[in-house]
Amino acid sequence: MADFYDEENDLIIEDVAEEEKDSDSEKQSEDKDNEYEDVCFVCRRPESKAGKMFKLPNNICVCDDCMHKTMESVSQFDYQGMLNDPAFKKDMDQIMKGGFPNIRFVNMSDLQGSGGIPNKQKLKKKKKAEDTKPVLNIKDIPAPHKIKASLDEYVVGQEHAKKVISVAVYNHYKRVATGTMDEIEIEKSNMLMIGPTGSGKTYLVKTLARLLDVPLAIADATSLTEAGYIGDDIESVVSKLLAAADNDVEKAERGIIFIDEIDKIAKKKNTNSRDVSGESVQQGMLKLLEGAEVEVPVGANSKNAMVPLATVNTKNILFICGGAFPDLEDIIKERLTKTASIGFNAMLKDAFDKEKNILSKVTVEDLRKFGMIPEFLGRLPIIYTLEGLTKEMMVKILKEPKNAILKQYQKLLELDEVKLEFNDEALEAIAEKAMEKDTGARALRSIIEEFMLDIMYEIPKDDNIGSVTITREYIMGIGGPVVDIRSNQNASKKEAETKE
Image 1 (cartoon, rainbow, N blue to C red):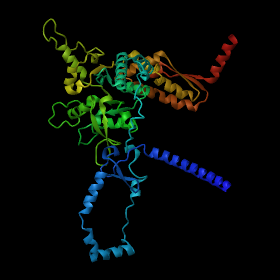
Image 2 (cartoon, rainbow, N blue to C red):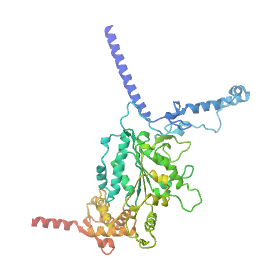
Image 3 (cartoon, rainbow, N blue to C red):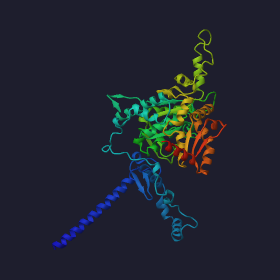
């Protein structure tokens, strides 16, 4: 009896262990499924807003409000009277026997695919207060000089701009990490970056995003319009940040948004039509820049009935706006030359025509004349400019950064076991051609692509080519590159060895 009892106990213990294993695996799968909130199939509100959901077949969830509305609308019909109607009974009998001819009912699972709403349009659940850790630690934030040193490896020149952006980002994340210091709330340091085309505005922010482990969204102001018009809604810039943070609202609320081409939303001059993509956009962005709770569409560019909405607080989101402001130089020159138009203090109209960095003299008044409204400029306290590129800076851009254009081509030819070299005179010639195009660093790529085409085409034909040297004559179109054959290289190496 005892033996039987022991064996039975062993069996029971084994069964319990197996049940525990099964329950653990079920819990893990449930945790993965529960990473995202359920969204109502009818009103598209998440569970955190709508309350507990009714689970229907095919992973469809309906909130309490929508379910009550449905039941109320259904209860308006007199089903008891309808069931007693002989004509209805006859129709039901026919359906039960033969079904509906030539009619196929829709299967909801076919419409839903895997069921429910795709994860890209679902919100991640907020963690419980017990498990939450500090969002940022002050010790983990790199100091301004370290941020600038990292930017120096990729961006040539623009010392003032790199210093400003390093300090602003450092102060911003100190503010996010601490919240308040001695009951003093630190204001947000949004930035406005002004610089000629090709001076490195977008590249500076992209490099910064690589260095900082925070979600970053790069939006374009050209497609933004007032709500209700064709184009992207203003909230879509925050929607992009939410997507970059994997729909985690808490993570998105400490990210960076870079809005490029901000000069394209300036007020349109001499127009009587409604300015839906200019002044209206600036007015709509005021609450975003200052910090407010914004209803943001999840996984879409505009709000509509089929898209769930998330509430994002923009108080801790750093906004960096950038633009070329093409006609701003004329406004600055006009202000500078108007100090005295007649007499001894009068200045010539062309006094500032030869000045390269005229944008560095910009004031808020100049930006107002350009078409930016004062409320918008007031929410961008840090305004700084990038220098126009000089010939010397162009040469440095070609060879000094970590991913310089020349290094990219040298790597490409290394794969064909060919060494690519550039004379200093050749680099100067490329820079001179780029300065003529007046499109900044973007011109360098197009010039190099042009003269490297024949070299990249011809080199794979001949395995004997060992190295190619680009000369000034080749770039100017009055000569060719210097090509060394491998046999010549080997002979010269042997001569050097014998001499030694």
